[in-house]
Structures are given as structure tokens and as C-alpha cells.
Image (cartoon, rainbow, N blue to C red):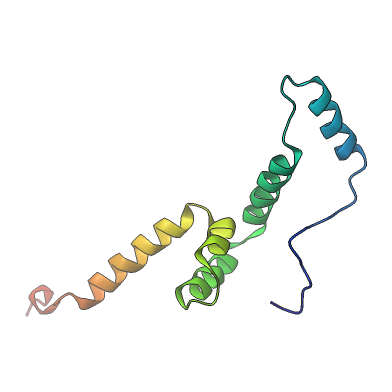
Length: 104
């Protein structure tokens, strides 16, 4: 994992963002789950930061079993299902007998 030292907690400096979350927690009936907001926001930003090559690299690592499905789903979201369907369709097409398509 490229030498990163992430543990189970990701921390960052949140000045106005923290104050805004605390204010919303105060005024919103029932409060807000700031941890869940942060988690959802992080997932959205991770997905936005991937380009097509990154998505392919993540899917290839997932296909080889190098990363868990849960990690791949965080990064790819529902795209992982479409990528699997495309791979299955491609594999089926490669196995298909194409001799009947040849016109002499």
C-alpha cells in the first residue's frame, strides 16, 4: 500500500467545517451523525478523484484478489457491477464460435 500509515482513523484539520457540523448538530432535530457525514463525503471525494485509468487499475487489483471487495466498492461504487458485467460479456464473446460470421 505504497508505504502509507493509515490506521482506522483518518484525521484532518477542520476549522469552519467542524463549527458548521457542530451548529447543524445543535439546530437539527435529533442531531446529525458527523462521523457518517464525513464517511459519506470521503467516499464521494475518493470516487470523484479517480480517472478511468485509476478505475481500471482498482478493478484489476480487485479481480486478482489483491484488494477486498469492500475496498473496491468504496472506490468504484456501483461501477464495479457494470465492470463485472462488461468483463463477463467480453469473455463470452471471446468464447463464441465466430466461424459462422465469416463470409466467403
